[in-house]
Image 1 (tube, rainbow, N blue to C red):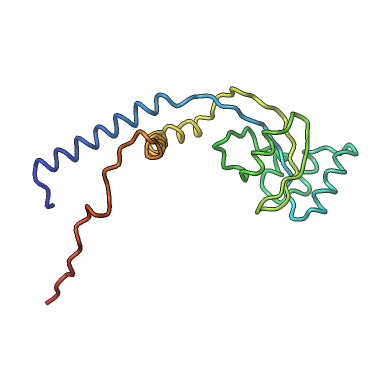
Image 2 (image 1 turned 135 degrees about the vertical axis):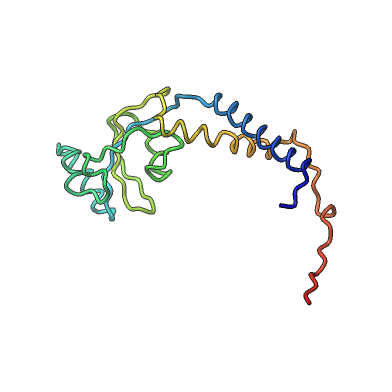
Length: 174
């Protein structure tokens, strides 16, 4: 395979060290996070979203309305999209950001590339346990996140420069 025994051993050593670092960083991942429990009704137009807000203010049930008019699957669960943390991908970032600024019981319209989201915050918890899936994702990304932060740090010495790259010689074909 073009590897000397010494090169192979160095490669294996680097892999073992990377795995150990990944495991150590995964152990440091917090198991809780600030989260917000949201439900939504997704429609395609501003007029529809405004009408839904009016119907809710007139006393219609959010869950029943979501089942009847929402254009996305959570409508069948009464619009409940569950608990969201800053890493959630269940909704566009703009929906999550707006929800974190609201209090339980508040409703508003958020526009995204998917349409007009009528959202309602049900609960907020500053220290809610992460789901098993979310915790596993965060643990698996721990090394990548650490490396990304380290690369952006001023304390990292950078030795690479373009003048250290050997010139490429054109390949000769016969």
